[in-house]
Length: 95
Image 1 (cartoon, rainbow, N blue to C red):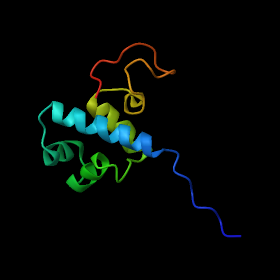
Image 2: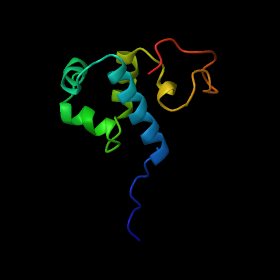
Image 3: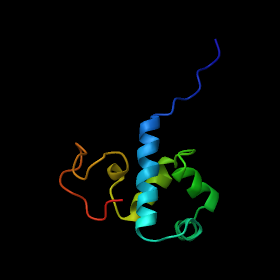
């Protein structure tokens, strides 16, 4: 029996929510795609794929992205500030 491919732990809903938050954060600051990608240190195509729900950043990039934006990682996955069961209270700078 051939080995099973690794499973992606993220659902389509997770990916959609992440992409929506990322795009909302960028647009809310009036940043162009190329500008924010350069500032973060990834190709414009990479950032675009994140926003289009085509790709998801690696865990290391996700951590750096949360730091870059200024939010805890849970803000990318929980719909409302403070709704993460592991993160009490509201978060400043939510995406």
